[in-house]
Image: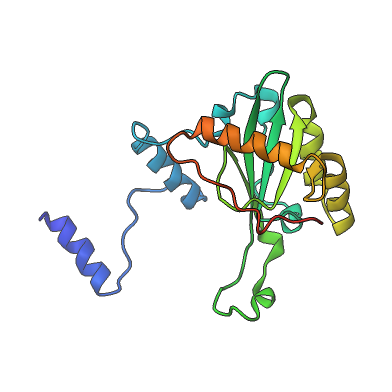
Length: 203
């Protein structure tokens, strides 16, 4: 084993501070590290969840801001169904809830940091427990994005559902569910599964 490897292991076992893997050039070391890993592993990375694989035109692929207050009003998993004339696609909007720590399961709300919540938007289906379906055609995506960015109250979220949402009580719920299941199966032939609606909301 090379001497450098022994040095790193000794530092780890002795709870020392490991040296950085390379000299960081920016004041955002985490993002810089992720970019370096992405470049290093480019040949073997799975790109199916990248928005560029969705088939949407470039103007509607502008990402939402990385950290916005509206994330606290969205459920954990919103499945966006994009309707076109002859085809459709799926996007997953995931709400990431921030906490100062997760040491307590009974009083977790006291540790919430809602101003640090973020949204992750990916192509396809991520997660087996969708909380809501949002249905939109490609031309309506800018309006959907604007309404998500403007969420500040429960009433704002209710208005979002009135415009784009498919509530559990909607007469078209099962038709949308069938469409999602079919597209999910066609896009992920090996890894697709049955979606569980036990956490589906009706707000």
